[in-house]
Every structure is written in structure tokens, then in C-alpha cells.
Length: 223
Ligand SMILES: [Zn+2]
Image 1 (cartoon, rainbow, N blue to C red):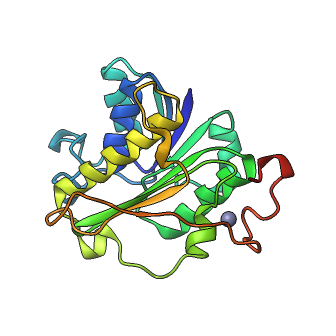
Image 2 (cartoon, helix red, strand yellow; image 1 turned 120 degrees about the vertical axis):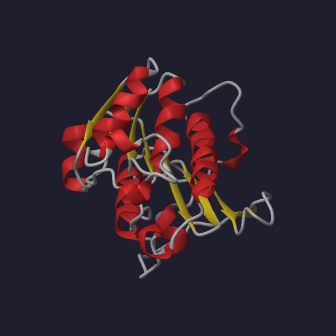
């Protein structure tokens, strides 16, 4: 399978290393370079990587472990996606930007592709697992709102590893790994505060008939 990972930071790191090690060929997209303030939570980077592009450096880490990955130092945009990752069968968002998350989900829904959207902030996070024929990201969240970012509000270092690991496990479930649990597809998992509980709140939700992303999908994809 071939997958795109959007974001090469705290979530993208564990996602890429896990999926790459499982044999998934990766396209990794991130516009940023490694900064000192990233190192406590982006464990794929070291001080020797400061100033280097995150996407290509993470791709190198994947290939050093025997995986296949290509990095692009770009902000992911739907209009470029067909060129750099049009043949991907799965897209996973680990970006720190609500607008990008919606764009990734909408792009996947429009193409009938499965997708995983992961977010982490402060002491918790959430993971949405989207597959064709289920309610989509926009059915639930409707549109981006001004939200705190990790860069502004902070995140406890280990939290991104935990959320990234959960997202990677679901991505592997989508990829059809025999050990994966497919029960969670089409569901939002919310981890309110991992210092208090590792038990997620499981949010099941329905399609909105007027959803701008999925209401116009071809009939064969609609449940
Ligand atoms: Zn929808």
C-alpha cells in the first residue's frame, strides 16, 4: 500500500516510522524545518537535524530502517496532492493546522479514499478514522474554527507519541494488517487527558444530509 502522511512533526514521526516499518510506501509532506523547540516531542529528530527540512529528514529515518519514503518540503494543498500523491490509497493527517485537516479529509472523501485525522494538544488528543460509506470529518466538525495550536498552547512531549501511535494502529487497520482491529472505522476517539485516563471516549456519529463534503459522493460509496 502507498500512503501520504501530512505533517512530519510529533504525530507524523511515529506515524511514518510505524507505517514505514510495516511496509507501507510513504509520501511525507511538511513545510517546516527542525527547530530546537521541536526536539522534546519530535523524537525522530536530533540536534544534528536543526535547520533541516522535516519531511525529507523523516523520510530518511524511514529508509534507514528499511522502509520506503519520499519527503516533500511543502504545505499540503489539495491542488498539489494529485501530483505528489495521486496514487496513494490512504492519507493520514498529523498536521497542527485545522484548515489542513479539513482539506485532507475533503480530498480523501472526494476520491473515496480512507483517511485518518490525528490531533494532539496539551495533555490529550483525538483520532478520527474515516472510510468511504461512513460519516465524514466534516459531518462531525462542519468547518475549521480558530483553535489553539501545539506551537502556541504547548503539548506534553509523550502525548504526541501516544496519539501518533493510536493513529498509526488505525492506519494499519485500514491497510488491512491481519492483526488490526477494524471495529473503529468511521469513529472518533477522544483522549481528554492521558495523565488521568488512557481510556478514550468513543464518539460515533451520523452523516449529515447537507454535508458539503460527502453528500454529493457517488451513490455506490454511500451507506
Ligand atoms: Zn460528511
